[in-house]
Length: 640
Image (tube, rainbow, N blue to C red; front, side):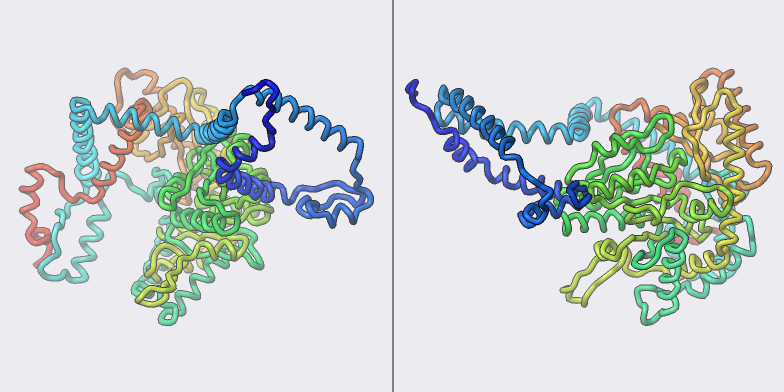
């Protein structure tokens, strides 16, 4: 290149753009679109006060407001600076060939894109790298055989615990085939009662954490049983055939909306449980983001303490979950980390009320403020607190707002089968606007079998569960739920005070509702949990960091419950401090799992546990011989 030859920098840039324009145009349009949504509610100050920024882009606004003026001097100075920079860049560019400048522009653009992707997806890149490394080592034959042997040992231990130890009280042999002839009603009832009586935990004695939310009142159970019997064979899918069930379902949604301060256009649907309610909310926000904002790779932003149901929903729906840390002192979602995790792909922010591990209620108002600021729907997961938190103020325990009173809250999930005391299999997902519920629905208009449409995951649904849920809400009424809430929360507050008096134990945050979690810096809390199991308790184990929690229900809302639990905790702490060696139990499993770097191994073990759910007999020769004793699935001596 000649020294006096100068390449017009504009031409170089233009030709470079011809190569890189597809990515640049796509990125720029997505950026501008996201910025419009992020900031369209921002304010601009003028002589007429504050006005929305989204109205300030047209010349009509500039010409209509005499209070807004542009400084010619400032603008001239600005362009002079730009010209100087352009001249300096052209001087530097003259040292290179034209193709070098174009290649440099392309490489620089791609490098900037790569750096941006690495920055925003660094945790995923680390996880993917670790997964590939662990997968490689697991493929080495000696290591693979060792892992298979260990998993098989784990399977036998899990199988023994599930099929032998926990079923020790069940005397009815396994039935592996349909009986040749049907049983009588009396025989079926007797077998059902005998099977229910098995197990080593007595669920009505209040020592099981969250295992049952009702059952202390026999009359209530009888009423539910009778109601289910009336509607046992109904199906809400056929609303024209069973209009009464459709009426009940609509009324359940309406009553639930009422206690969450829903009104006007607020709406919802009934689901089979909290997991399905979360799944439906994620599906609705995924489709809303795609239709309204053009989001092709939808993301959920939530705290690490949020329910794993969001991970399940994201896995099913092709979404991504960005998890942020919790405040290590309060165990609430870290708002700063939550804000930093928001991108143009975010279609949902999650607030827990309360979260399951520690019973902590997130700062719903602050999270909803972020949602309003960036035009992102905010979901409040109130599955656990659904029919508890709405009644706490009336019960004498006021809380900061967490429901539809908070501007920016767009959806709430609330389980009726927990503190609503309905039988398992019902929950409600609610929305602030019908447009979100519209995105939840699934419709196939051109199926050969007709137009197919369903509001939730199932097609056919059990009308009996709708009926007993409806019956539970009517039976308790507001006064019944307020009284139950008063007793449960009073017991939880008493338990908190007693645990704070145990030097070796520390509360995890400040739980305000029904779940109380604690850990220890002086003893192995997982060993304490295993000893509590031996004492007849069934507490929940937490991890990262390790801890224990108990979920209080009406079965535990007695004057002496907290004293009895803490008394056994003190005894367990004392024994752990004095003992040597290991304690077998679930705590040991969690302790071992925490030390395994390859979490896919933990996942494999968990899947083995799930597989054992569907086994009737142990997988060994003696079990096969025993199975032969069961003729056509008929237990000996039962059916004549």
